[in-house]
Length: 325
Ligand SMILES: NC(=O)c1ccc[n+]([C@@H]2O[C@H](COP(=O)([O-])OP(=O)(O)OC[C@H]3O[C@@H](n4cnc5c(N)ncnc54)[C@H](OP(=O)(O)O)[C@@H]3O)[C@@H](O)[C@H]2O)c1
Image 1 (tube, rainbow, N blue to C red):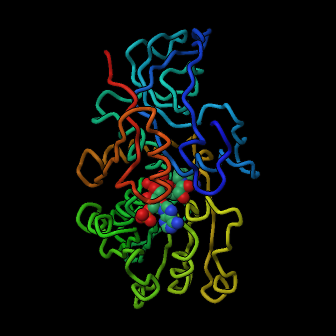
Image 2: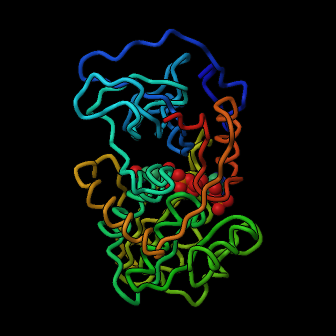
């Protein structure tokens, strides 16, 4: 990070730097990074505002989830050539404590699934929907940023749970993906539709909220009695210097509704459970996914800014290198 972004980040807030690489010490592995993830939470790390994780300082590597191959290992859990995922950064190589890495099963094809549908964004959809949203068959589940990495999985999981699903996304191509690729029963394009009008006649039992702001203000008017609002993220507010309040507490009283936020890292002890189920559904063709790939580490800032602008069609990823082994 070359400068702390103000508002929407600029490419000049980032810089490429070359440094000497450390050899892995006991309990560490040297990873050659193949793929880097681009995620909204990275914007929070660039800010000085109090959050669940320490802010980045100028000169720090941008934290990111990565898929890579082990080049050298000083730990019995990994061997050279193993594919791993870990919280590393936008970089070409990283030395990491082996305990912070997860092995990618060779049967997972393509392995990038471990960065989305069968990785953190899939886990986020799984725990947010099932543990907090508690969908019941016949419920109506509305998802915002529904064609994005988390949203595309959340909608399909709700469908597997026997719910009616309504997805909200920006633009005609994403709206088409919602019904044709991700199986949503109805799609709302928030760029051309009036969201509250489009939801007239719906009674929303579960709202899986990825965006906050005006879209969520519209959805909360259509809640059903006993609705559950899952606060997964508020991406429409991440660049705002003064985030605006979204939910009207009075409506929670009127609808006897419950609203709860969650953080995926609190579910780390249950990742294996989610990974097994998601891998099974993907292999069965019950879950579809779409990746939005940008080539080259030097283009990661552009991919990140584009994602914050809603330009990504699916999970935003940066391809850093080809696999060697
Ligand atoms: N709680 C957790 O542990 C956890 C973990 C992972 C992610 N999250 C949250 O989940 C949400 C989705 O993350 P993701 O990785 O799946 O990203 P994503 O949905 O793939 O990409 C972000 C999307 O947000 C939408 N967006 C951006 N600015 C917006 C605005 N002003 N108004 C409305 N929509 C806007 C855009 O979709 P449209 O073009 O369709 O509007 C954009 O494509 C984020 O809020 C993220 O912080 C939370």
